[in-house]
Length: 119
Image (cartoon, rainbow, N blue to C red):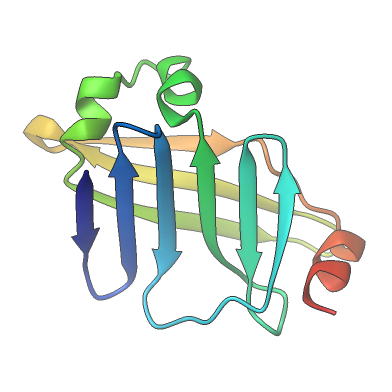
């Protein structure tokens, strides 16, 4: 298992269960929304504070990131763009040899879903 933490995010990747978790450090989850292999966590204001990706190696393989690279992940964080009616979420991963990859996660979230998740 790979576990990491910096000032902004914590992350862990389990090779055995093939699950990647990325969470904003110090932020409490008040609600979640499951979207296929993705669970998005929200704070009480409806901001994205974390994500869990099941079958992570299969998903990231489509972006040219191998399971071996996930097993040696150096850092991970989320980048969120919030608009009036949706959010876009990227995983920003630093892989071995300091290769940075930004991958758009298939989680456009309508504002109604966000409000329902934290209600």
